[in-house]
Length: 369
Ligand SMILES: Nc1nc2c(c(=O)[nH]1)N[C@H]1C(S)=C(S)[C@@H](COP(=O)(O)O)O[C@H]1N2
Ligand SMILES: [Mo]
Image (cartoon, rainbow, N blue to C red; front, side, top):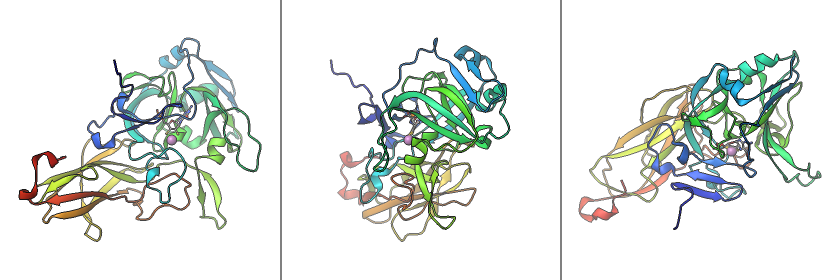
């Protein structure tokens, strides 16, 4: 019997497994786990939760080894948080950029349960002079060392957080997602949840935490997942960190037909980095005025925000629907493609092309919404 292994998800790569959700099907504010995108650089390590240990070392007073039961006995926190892969929307780069051609589905919003990283660090005791917390995953493999250096050999997926973020209320070591034990693909038995940050910071399958005296320059920080910062004169490399303000239209989908004179609901989600979404605007064709959409509940600091706008097309023809989010820190989505983010951070405005038709031209089967 034919069995679909990942119903409702688009397979971007089979091994390592990379799955994209269908953003057009957006309905639940908490993305069901079986509809949540998967982004993995290496095959999933097979970890036996009974054998697994979390080691905490480096610049700490007392190096620790904790098993899952010990972590589960610590005070638990649940945080609803959106995670967007920094490569989400890469397909919109012109000309095309190398890498998985994510459309709009490398993003999801889930409820994560675990311990605050801060509580684990407090148990170990952080020494003065520590500036970053390195999180190391159990998955390993070969990477491209670049043109000018030899390959570093097999390396693990590892990313660091600055100490102030690591000690904040928005960073968890999570063992549960949407109320169930983490699945293998999403990082069982333990993953990082880094509210407001792009997905690469949310290290899965964590085995080691190291307190570091200087910023980490590992592969996933300095060779990948970085941007050029021009703020200080000469361009310098800065590891990607917080998500950038963004709204996406889920429906109507590109290519849809809507009816003149009939209300059409434009619906989507918006999110940003550390700042809350303040407004989402909608424009029904280039040059038309921006109109404010309605932000919908629930409102949670690190989660995405659903929004809608009811629009009644007044004339037939093609329409390019755009949305634009603004956050409480004053960030607004740009109109133009980014130049300094390699193949990442695709948050510029990308219109959705649809067609409005007069009632008499319309055939029932043409309705998509
Ligand atoms: N150990 C490990 N952690 C990882 C990755 C990985 O390849 N290995 N991928 C990162 C990236 S780039 C993203 S976008 C998120 C995806 O998390 P998900 O697969 O649970 O959606 O995990 C991050 N954590
Ligand atoms: Mo990612």
